[in-house]
Image (tube, rainbow, N blue to C red; front, side):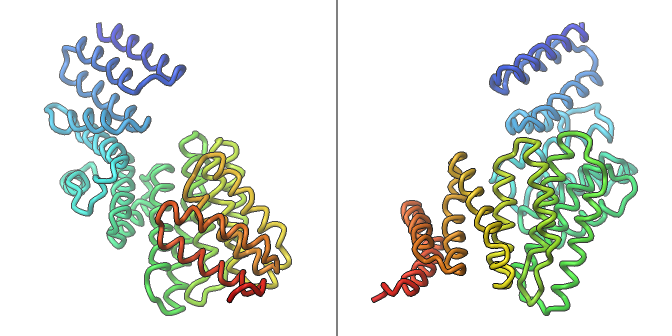
Length: 363
């Protein structure tokens, strides 16, 4: 009976994948499976499978519901409990409200990992990586970095856990570089440790699609860290190779939004770098911003349509093209006013003033 119900579940899953039907179809299929199961252990296994599939598909409501059913119910092993926590954190990650610093799920997962012999299993390392990501999202950067570094340094950590942890360490380092007033030596050390963590996370071969998605994101973060020029740090040209590798992988995956992000990174590398470097690579820089803007318009990405025209306008000003620069800046300013985005308005107005000065039109 259980096998019959599993076949029925697989049938519903196949229908969902082929037709894009609502996610609750797959949940309903597992309800059929659960109804046919008389074994407590089998019920836990099926419920956990449902939680993992729902979380992987981005079905946050069902992912939370099924994973909590496993965690709150009897009869699950330590490893099943770890997997349920992973599914729960993945599913909750789709809810902005769940990213609060006092997240009950994150605290419960941390307590559980410290309570038994399961702490060094592969699944436990994946859970730690997920915890570090949630902690980073909630602003608890030091704790997130500490946990992620433990994952990176543990031989039991599978490649996808190391990729996720490397992203957390690299992103945490970048956030600290942007937010903290650091001496040059400290900033150099922080950027170096962030780059080392990202390089380590990029090394395992990306065989599955999920691995490739993570690797593409890691490469983009590596580009962001290497191109950071604050605190007196020079922009590292290796950033361009990282962005380019990320773009190629994202194009293969069909991730146009991700491609746009990396193109923006290339444009900003030249925009905020030395003037001579910009003049030598003007065509590359302009093309990167224009391709980004084309994708942003196609995808109706408001963030890209808001920021990129202003950055492209600033770039064109540096290249001595104030007429075309003003056109781009006005485009950004109009959208910023429509969205009532005061920060973007301020940046656009500043560049607009510079363009008008260059044109001799400022009263």
